[in-house]
Length: 445
Image (cartoon, rainbow, N blue to C red; front, side, top):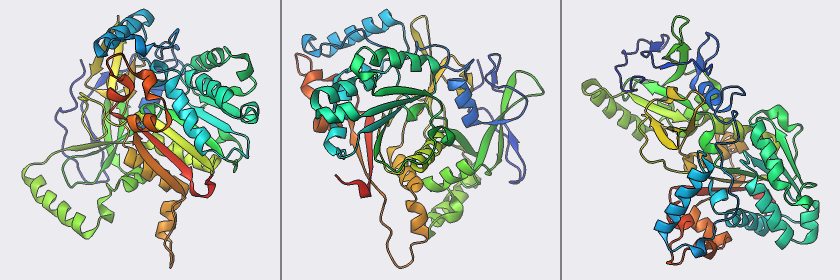
């Protein structure tokens, strides 16, 4: 077992020096290749998406695909639903079922209804889905458009899945292909959505981008400070003396993505307000008496993806859904992830993120207010704020954050996921998930 992250950390020297952490994990699986230090986000990306060793690249198995929709109106209540769910997990032997899978077709139907209600239908409908899993969302949205949209909307629409996993890309084509007419409208692009070159030339036309349970698996960086007032330092991982063991190394902030994330989150003490500086001064007194190390996880993968999307698709409308809170997280730090693996039907949570060796999922909670800040920042609003001159800048995006229950009540059919006694797992058990909707201000219907 790797030592806990709460192990003793040596005091930092001056900012020009690096600090080291004690050995943490063995890298026998090839996740940490070469002898050069890597940022934590590169470790997370490799552990999840490496073509040979990554969790999502080994097989399509982590994401479940139900044979048929659950008939909630035939279940007595919560106990019956949980028993049914337990049987499904044992039968399929997979890591998890996504909400869009558990509540098909109704979950995806609600998303399709929100698009149909707000889209500009005078232009062909174009939808990008990033990380489409087994293809259930794509198939159900295409089903909904075929059944409910004007025929021209369905006939002219394009649905493009951007999928980093080759095995899941194949599965999506198989799932959507169950309806022959969908295939002429659906395509899969096997690539990394954060890579700007994969999107080609800037497309100014309106489109929709869907990201369901994607943000939680995007690479994050880690920053560290030995006490309440010392400057944040970025965390790197390196092998020790050419062995398979690794240690954390702390360096002054220099990575552009990390520095931007620190600025967006307001963690940069150098640019603090007067009241914030007074608070830092009070913390400085406390830190000399009771020094307390700080760790914070930064969604640099989200920042990079939003950068790319705003550059490639400046008129996009965005729908994202994810977990806003994760229970029982033992890994330290603000916005820390759960690292979970499943073996012989049993799920185990790890206390150290470095335990992820391609056999474990790493998923992060989504700070939706921070997502909103990143969205506005990448749209160019923050730059306009700094150089606004005599006029108050106008935000380029209209955004709203909704609990899943609120989203489903507004756009969906909640009765379809209710059991006989009135229990509704989609509304009652997903209180820690939210929807984020963002549309360009110049694209009002």
